[in-house]
Length: 144
Length: 235
Image (cartoon, rainbow over all chains, first blue to last red; front, side, top):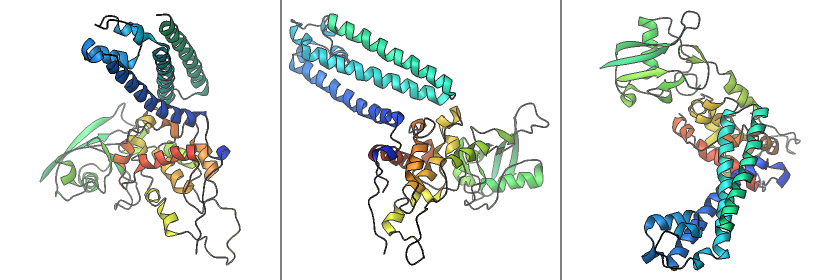
């Protein structure tokens, strides 16, 4: 009679390379972005968005909870909308969105760029893009 | 009933470019597309070229695009595809002549994943078979059904972009051996398919699952391989 033995490959023997870690990262960050957007929308409703903002403004805030996004609404006081909590939430959303999006571009580029030199160039450009977009975004979020 | 059969034609020795020939044929609605092609070859134009062997959906020779979808010509019936039928070669592989494509890139990718049983352990004490429970066998049953017709791989947008991508058929075969409790090269294969031209090129378009004439849930199998790289579970 055959016996069933557990077959779990050790960490170093399962092909878990940077490529597959980024595959997992992309899935987890997609879920995280949904969560952060939901937190921002619920937060906006708690802070009075139901009567002071229209749907488009609430969604704009939800996708990037930066206080400059509520300046043109009927919100009387911007202070609750520009606390460190919201700045940190927006910063986390920015960082994971940039990494998620740029990695998506690299994955699509890899479909069409097959030489190792071309792929290396695409990766260098993507790293520069991540650093530049993140730095610009963080500068705007923390100085506006 | 009368059917209009529009066939992709290309002879590299005579044609500068491909063309379509249209044939009007008498057919039964239970006729297979392969029957129509045989009729054209037998009665209209003996130079029409296409692959076929068993003609019963087992050998996988006659995969082609029928009305834009990858199918086996020996399994597709006239009543399933209608009376206006367009037959073209598989996409993503170079056309050799008419409906025949060069399968070399497909088989080169297939060979990369070591498509054979590997077990260097001594035989069991009784010197007989390496036993396996019905549950262990059922784990990879679906992926044993692949007939290497290439319908899945040539329906995949990632493969159209680059034939360096191993493709669904190779990954299905990797699944078949990696999840086989008797095989001992799971780790080696996992490292091969985790390369840039392996699992990462699958964007879950599901074209392969729709195209497979053996109804193998290919995208699901590839998903299980991706999860196996994370969890290490190959059971």
